[in-house]
Image 1 (tube, rainbow, N blue to C red):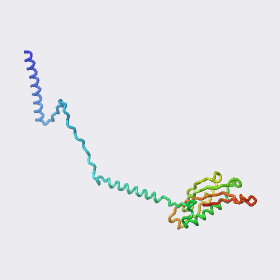
Image 2 (cartoon, rainbow, N blue to C red; image 1 turned 90 degrees about the vertical axis):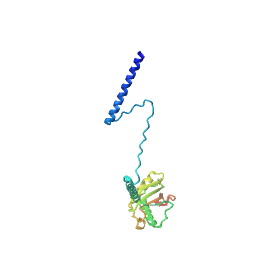
Image 3 (tube, helix red, strand yellow; image 1 turned 180 degrees about the vertical axis):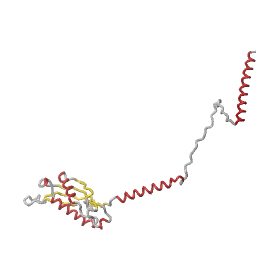
Image 4 (cartoon, rainbow, N blue to C red; image 1 turned 60 degrees about the vertical axis):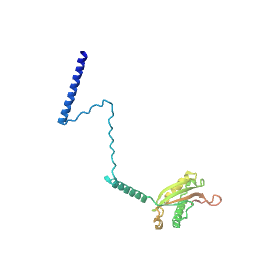
Length: 216
């Protein structure tokens, strides 16, 4: 009897649950209410949602091509300005001092001026004591001003090296470039050997003549 009573009780409980579910379904259909999803009790996997892939814009959309073109044009103009500002240099080393006859008169006059100033301003502390030569590179602008002086090979005597730089500075401004040079040259870069010498050093009985010589 107890078993029959237990079975009857379970059956009553199940009927009550089923009646409740049917009632909830009827209300949802009548009022248009969304149904609550049932829990997945059997452990089956739900299908995954596919990720959304954004389609890249087609060429020409959004004005990107116009922006890129403007940037490129601006960059080209900047490089052209930089190129126009680069001085046109002509180099004359100790080996290429006569590769263009247009420059010969100008360089000869420059050399003579350096020798004249150097001889008149021969360093006093070096007279009769120190002699030597050094290799110097001088950059001269079209207006005759000196852009830069570099000592490529020193004389071994700081006094003579400093005197050579000072003498070159004393000579500026040098002559402006003539038109036939100015048309394609902004800076002349000339390398020469400057020698502080006593021409009569080998003949002590003769009058000494200290000079600055500029050679190739």
